[in-house]
Every structure is written in structure tokens, then in C-alpha cells.
Image (cartoon, rainbow, N blue to C red; front, side):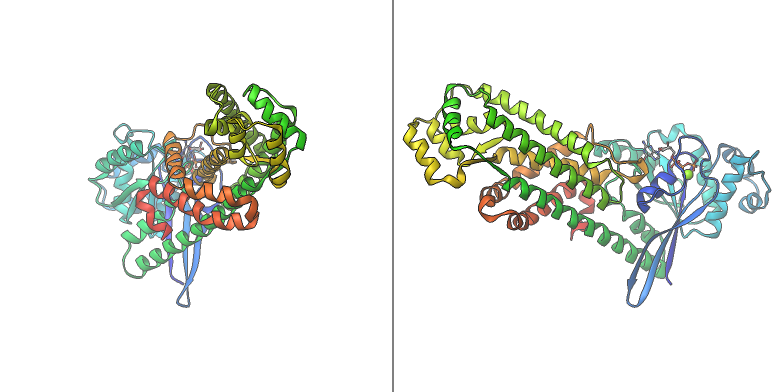
Length: 484
Ligand SMILES: Nc1nc2c(ncn2[C@@H]2O[C@H](COP(=O)(O)OP(=O)(O)OP(=O)(O)O)[C@@H](O)[C@H]2O)c(=O)[nH]1
Ligand SMILES: [Mg+2]
């Protein structure tokens, strides 16, 4: 069976086990903020795929980290004939010489098992300030297996910081011919679109059959992640279809009252509307929570309970509602025509009357009881409230941001948490993409009550796929091919 073997190697405590967890979607080994947590090398199945009657397999080793004593040893062994052989023949005590024992374990793993060394560096530190890096590189050079370097611990995804961090490390490591590549794969904040690069870069440094196997496995990794992506877009489309269809009936009398009430003051609170709003927000929050939990599971993460998430979503939407109410106040007296329709939408906290434009017209002057009554009679199906188009778009943005939170959350970071402090460029990328697809989104929203949930979801699927591809390909331009 064609197999490629990758070994995760680094100075201790840089994050090998955390990255193994992220890639494997499993809580393997132990992750802790201290030296030499992993003390024995362990192999895991990274991915397996069939092609042309052959089974291709990639194995990932998590190894103990190099200790600080190794660098000192390397300095001493520089002039030795066979430093690696010397190291491998030493007998160090696992407890009293833990640092050297762990280093020897890692060196043995590279020498005996690895096709490619994946060397991780802590990007939160400048290479010039870390004394051990050059000496560890010399040891890797003595062993002679190809090395690809990944920056870990980069923090929040920040393209400028990542580019400058990579450039700094690249230039620092340029003297080591054994280093074939430097890029970024943060165990905590990587996006899934980057994961296959581990295999792709390995293919780039291997030859012949091994290179071919690594490329086949990289393609299989992409395909698997793309499958998850397609399922995620379906779930998001289904969620938003439900939102577009969600409605609550209004009592006939109260519609008239509300029209009159809105004429009196845009900021009046109406008990029935308040109740409806609460019901619809609660439904929206529960649905969103359920969908996000499904996305978390799809991405191989463990998450919070739907209940807790639902609470978060409710708070998030409640905040948006306040914003809308203050906007309504600002719109104030401009109660005519279109502005009236807009204000009515805003004043009702993101919901619009079954025929927002009709209410706008009513507010614009045709406010006789007869007309309102006529509206109720002739358009009884519309005697209800639903989310306004504007609010629907807000919901879309909110859900896309939550998706990005899931797509970037590496399992090595632990249990999925609400994405607080998302990078600002995610928000601008999301807003821009929603703006680009606004007419399609609004058209689906407009048609939703007649089409029903299923057809709306089907219509929205392509739009959400296009939206997410635009966002992800914009954030990771080099990974556009993942979606092809
Ligand atoms: N912020 C951040 N912290 C990380 C990342 N990866 C790992 N860590 C943290 O770094 C510490 C060490 O992580 P491990 O995965 O145990 O590191 P290791 O390289 O396997 O360490 P040893 O097995 O002890 O050599 C832990 O506290 C992790 O939570 C990362 O990408 N970002
Ligand atoms: Mg470890």
C-alpha cells in the first residue's frame, strides 16, 4: 500500500499535539502548557483513499518535543563524525534526563520513520530571539529528511501579520537547505481550507511514487473537507429558508390599531407585536443554535449545548433590535411613502407587515379605516408579520460570521466557544459578499412565503455556496482551487 509518513517535530511546548488534534479531529494525546507533555511518539492514521485499485495512506506521528539540553548537545556535537548515531546510542533516563530522552525519541522517529518532517515554530516569537531554532535545524540537517515549516500560535487570523511572520521566518531559515517551505497552519485558528497544504507541501518535497501518493492524498483531503463544506452550506440555506418563511398571524383588529399606533408614534410599543417579536426571536435563536451545533459536529468539533448557543443568538439579535429601534427614532417624523414603510419595518424590530409596501402606503396618507379593513379582507393571508428583508440580511451576515467561527476553530483549541472578537476583516469580507448577493437573497426572501421552506432552501443553496466561496476564496486567495 503506498504510504507517506509525516512527523510532527518541534521544540517542546510549541503545539504539535494541538495541531495533531486539529488535523485528526480527535483529542489524541495530552495538550498542556509545559515542557515535555508528550513523552513517546505515537502514530495516527491521517487519511486513506482508494485510487486505481490502490489504497493510499498517510500517517501522522506526534512526537516528544526537543528539549533545551539538546541544543547544548548539538553545539558540542558539531564537529563529531556521526552526531545522530551518537545521540541514538546514548542511554538516558526517562525521568531524570527527560529533556534528552524526549529529544532522542523525536530524533529516532525522524531517522527511522519519517518521509517528511513537519517542523512547527511558535510564531508569537521572533526567530532571532529563539536560540534553539538554529541548533535544532542543524540536527534536522544531519538527519537529512526534507523539512516543511509551519508557523503555529499565530493568534487571530490576520493576513498582514501572517505574511510578515512568514517572511521573517523564511529569511531566517533560508540558510538551511533542508527547509523546503515555510507557511502557516495555526492549530487554534487555521481555516479548514488550509489543511490539505500539509500533504500538498509534502508532495512538493518528495519524489516519484511518494510524491504522487502525497498529491493523491492531498486531493482526497480537499474532497473530504469540500464534502463538509457542501453539507454546511445546505444547513445554512435551510436555516435561512426557515427564517424567510417564518411568520406570525396578527389579529385583524390589532393590525388597524398598529397602523394607527405607528402613525401616532414610531416608537410606541405594542403588546401584541412585542409578544410576536419575542416568539419569533426565540424561534430564530433556537433554530440558529441547532444549526450551529450541527455545523460544529460536521467540522469534527465538540460544542456547547444548543441551549447555551440559543441564548447567545438571542442576545445577539436583541442587540441588533435595539439598534433598529434607535434607527426608527432617528427616522422619526418622516412618515410618508417609502420612508414610512422603512420606518414601520424598523419600529417593529426587524419585522415587516405582511405587505410592507402596503403599510408604507397606508402611512403615506391612505389611512382610512375602510382601506385598512379592505387590506385585511382581501389580503387575509398577509395579515401577519414576518422578518423584514433588511433583518433577513442581518441574519445572513450573523450566520455567515458564525460559520467562519466554526470553519476556523481547530479542535486542538478545545471545546468550541462563541466567536468573540472575530477578526474585523471577516466582517468586512462578509458584508461585501452579502452586498454582492443581496438581490438574490432578497428575491428568495420575497418569494419564500409562496414557495415554502423546501423550495426556498433549494433556491438559497447556490447563493450561499457562492457567498461562502467568495468569502473564503477572498480570505485565502491561494486556496481558490479547493472549490473547483
Ligand atoms: N494560542 C495558541 N496556543 C497553542 C497553539 N497550539 C498549541 N498551543 C498551546 O501551546 C501549549 C503546548 O501545546 P502542545 O500541543 O501540548 O505542545 P507540544 O508541542 O505537543 O508539546 P510537548 O508534547 O510537550 O513537546 C498548550 O498550552 C496549547 O494550548 C496555537 O496554535 N495557538
Ligand atoms: Mg505534545
